[in-house]
Structures are given as C-alpha cells and as structure tokens.
Image (cartoon, rainbow, N blue to C red; front, side, top):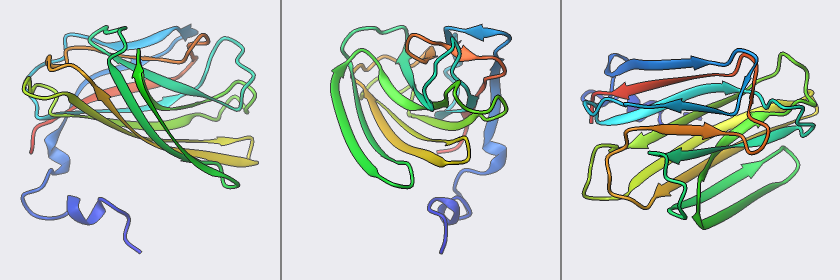
Length: 189
C-alpha cells in the first residue's frame, strides 16, 4: 500500500528535495521554556519545521503537547483539529478561540532518556496576506516500548498578517535537553 503523499511528491513539477532550504536550527542545551524562530525571510512559498522533542522540568507524563503561537500572538485567534491514537484507543478533538494551536507531542520525562518524539509542521502560504494561515502537523512518540502515540493535527491562525515568527512551547515544563527543531523554506508551489 502506498504511503500518502509519496506518490504525489514524485510527480514531475511538484516540490523536489532541492526545493527545501535550511533557514535555522535550534538545539536545546540544558532546557528551555520555548523554541522561537524569528525574523523569518519572506522569500518562500511555504515553511516546514522538523523537530525531535522531549519535555523538560521533571514532567512525569508519558507525553506532553507541543503548542505553537504565530508572530507572538497570545490572543484567542487559533483553531485546532486533531486525530490521535495510542494503539489501544483512537480519538478526535477540536478547539476554537484558543491562545495557541496544538501542533505535536513531546516525549515525557517518565520515558527512557534516549527517547524523543518526532514532529513535522507545515505552515502553508505563510506570506499570503489575503487569507488566514493554515498549519498541519504529524507527530508521534513511543512510551517505554509499551505503546506509541501518534497525532495528526491541523491549525488555523485567524490573522491575515504574514508569518514572521513561530514559537513552540510545552505548557509549564518547557523543552528538555537535546530537543532540536529545524526551520526550512520551501521554494516550489
């Protein structure tokens, strides 16, 4: 069975691997309350953030949510939709009028120290000032080899301003050591 997106990515005229350009990478030393990409160049069609994450601050949970705020906006200007599952149960949720959008999951401190989550976030048409900004995320982690957790999410920033900064946070606990996020610009359509 083909993996969704792989066939379309191989069609001539679509985005190629060479269309991705590295803009910035942030790797956490001891710990950090947030990861911010600022002064984002306005010369690409889309943005993508790829990260590995782990919660800091002694968070005992198996996993913690990664939140995103755009351009420092802390108002109730976000909407989020999620599909998620852990191998035993599956679910869906939606939130509107929140001060952030849920864009992934980070491995909690109750897991083995070498276990990190993986997250990919796409920021579509980030310079287009004629519409709201759409975000999508795919994220997952393992919990001490007992069960995994996978999350597919979408978000909407209810603002028509061009995206110039992105701030990722893990509520109250921050990011743990060696968490690393990289920002890429996508040149193609």
